Length: 536
Image (cartoon, rainbow, N blue to C red; front, side, top):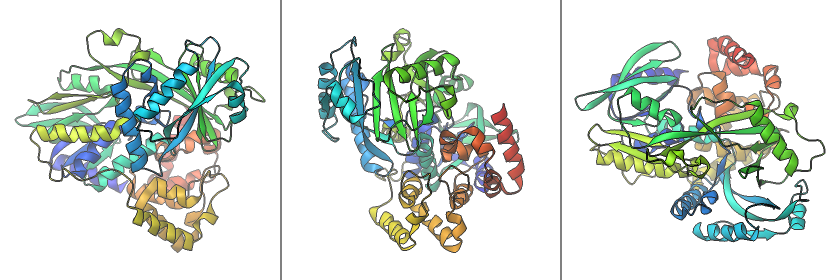
């Protein structure tokens, strides 16, 4: 935890160009963009980075095909361009995937109508992906035998993209990038509100690990608190044009239902989109869209039954899925940006997830509302431009702050991996060669792990049974990833708790050693903290 402790000491000791409150996808991309272009940035989150909305997504990077029906073509075009840019910038992480959508009898449109829409969608996406296909019921069945086509009229197949790893890991890599660019970041630091003193914002914060308080000074304050943007603005006396309404969504992680690497899409009984998404050795199913009043949510029995009933109706499984098959549950809210003009009272299912940035130029305050992972690079660039307009110097405006390392770095890593025969160490649970996974997750930092394994072959061994994570990955997480609680690693830096049942994790003989690697003399306390939280 030395990285975090060092940054905690730095936060009150200088004046930053910008303080970013919230380490979800909006805050992480804003911090990475600003610091990459030369601004002095601080980033705090009252929990762990990517600890809320950003770890409960569908892992899909899509261009907003659902907005075709509402005619929001400008947004669709923008999101398609953003999706394409992410695929080009992160080829190991953001990858094209086929969506197979089945249309049942009685649906509001004949299948040919949405199929024609997929062609327009493809063209609006600059024909960047594979072309759409129209499918008759027998064609659907041939591609995916588990789909129940008895009531199907037809369907279509088209392309979007998805995250090969989990969403929280993708977000943290922006945080890691920001740290590499000089951002002073700390998780579990809660803002208690901010005030203006002359030309500066003074934000009082609390370190939630020991309840100590201190102040952070910045020229600009950026509220990227996700679902809690409105709440923090009230603490700081900030008025905005936009505010949030909330839609709750849940996903269930179950054993792998099909070996194919495509997303199966349906329309649920109430007309909402419903997905079956590959997740390595598991399958993610959902989601729901339920209007809620507060961002603090949990999955109810009705939510779980809705998902299970819909999946069992639409798939022909040897044994219907039941609660006993659920490995993990993801439940969070989607914050939707609206203006107080009555739009929040419309059917929120028709509200888009486009972001909005409210700017108070006089007080140098930005509030980021809404947004989705697909648009994260645009958010970062827009925040830089707005901060520049507020009078903050941006020394390196043309610097490219995102993307994977140069191909030459990847080739150097792969060459060393081949010389070491690294892929021969790939675990039985792994869904891809070890060299591919390490590069995708860690980029140039994966070279450090090769050295660890070269010096001590035990560093290439899987530590927690049933996972694919190595000892050297935990060592790297300790050095560079600000793991403060065990859950930070199991759920957000890795996806262990998404693919391994809780009971198996608790009784894994490697769990205690994992704590010893991550936390040294605090290992026993962190282990008990995790076990007690899971029991609760």
